[in-house]
Image (cartoon, rainbow, N blue to C red; front, side, top):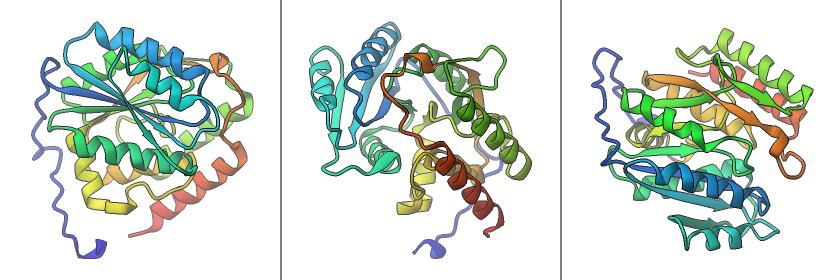
Length: 269
């Protein structure tokens, strides 16, 4: 039972800086995918170019959330030229279900010292940013977020209502539940030190990914907040103009879920 667990989190002063050797560790790249047959092959090719030019092993985990198009076939074809692992859902579970499956898959396979990178499968977030994220992990960060609010960031083609929602969420979180080093609470393009992710997942168990919809990414960050991890950000280029097909996010529903989540986490013990 969750309430029988005694957690002794170390403070920043007590926690030792993790060792990270880019030539020894493995980078896992997890892509939650639903009906991404058009954008996914382009993204996988970009990942292939970026990761093949750097030291260390890597593997891409595509979590197919019961797509109705050829997303699984795209992932299978890519596996002939690069390390791709396809994990499939028989029924659609939404982003939260795909995250849960992806986290569990990587945590079962990863070794201490490995890194997990998560990003969207629609080719709007650029894999070239991964190099800077891994560099920060090597400097001692536990989590690195590709942020839309760091100097040097650019967003292209993002609808006004979505920009407003993310700006409003940012202000709320920084006021009510601030996390040192974090400006972008909602972006899912992140790099996690696997040891930190495993510690969090072990503590929360099946409740680690408990929210539904796009607020699940926010909730993961809020839950990791209790561990005093060192979290930082890098600037990102968000190319929403390269997105194929309509967005799967329902802006008003996501905004409502996120506000309710924030208030619930703020006032719970």
